[in-house]
Length: 116
Image 1 (tube, rainbow, N blue to C red):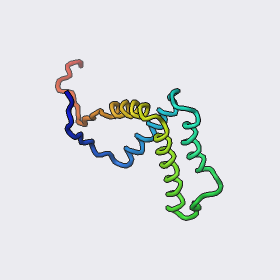
Image 2: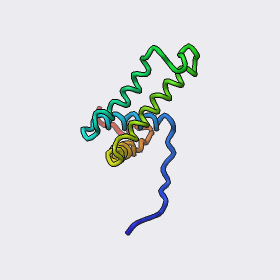
Image 3: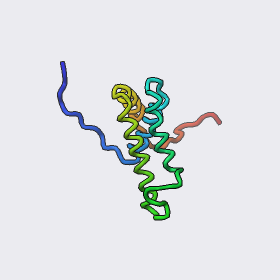
Image 4: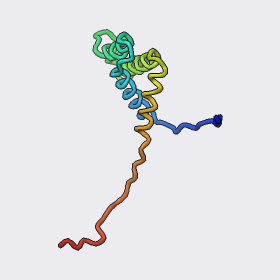
């Protein structure tokens, strides 16, 4: 019996999505089923940060760093697009389950301490 109801995904902030993307890329890089040439994509994107030639020089505060971030983001995106979809889905499901933890905040205090 299939349930065709739409699933509403929780809203994820940009920072959480970026962290999830980095963790996904790290898991995929360590997976032996991903071909080596595909694993080189995020490495090449990261190497762009250390190149002496930039599309937009870093001297322009803000814009210089923005192109660096864009290259890194596009490199991660291209990497996950090149990896076979079933492998990406498997790792994304694991990461989603790991992040599905609810943290409760509160205070604790001793009501009756008769150990003295």
